Image (cartoon, rainbow, N blue to C red; front, top):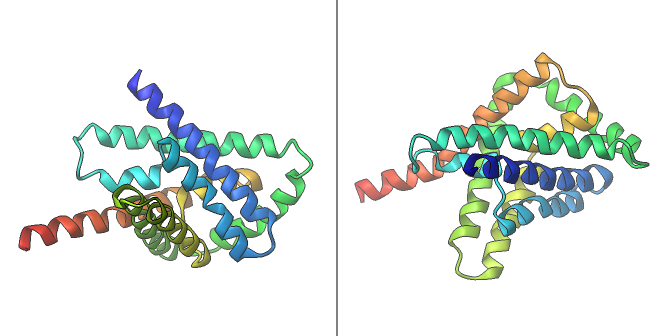
Length: 208
């Protein structure tokens, strides 16, 4: 039952990221779109849902079984983003969303894998900053500013977030073995970026 809850909360996190991605695609002003995209991480942190890019930051701080939980979360995020995209494509905003998503996906899938990997690393450094800031700040304003800056900066820098890209790929309808391969590279890059700050902190504490 615990892992079923983990999966359900991951699906719900995928839904939240999908909604964030929706407003980003629909707005021509990308600064405003990036700002409103924060509704995704805001909702996830507020309700305690499971997002891969947030949870992967703690793989070296938990028991070994946590790695399985992270895998379940990744799959749940994929299901949640895919379902969100499919439902939206049934609506009047579907064509506009798909057109915008195709442009976004074209840029991502024409990039080389090393670039994708590095951009994914930087993305999850910022997600870690946002999530850690939310968890550690004693003031509500500080919690939400951490989420705000972490998300807005990674989007405006064109860094790669694997769960957001699950949504974009689903809306654009560009799934293929090649697309899945790109997603795995993004996933790996996010994992590397997510553990840099926790491992760095642990190392600093040891030598301090």
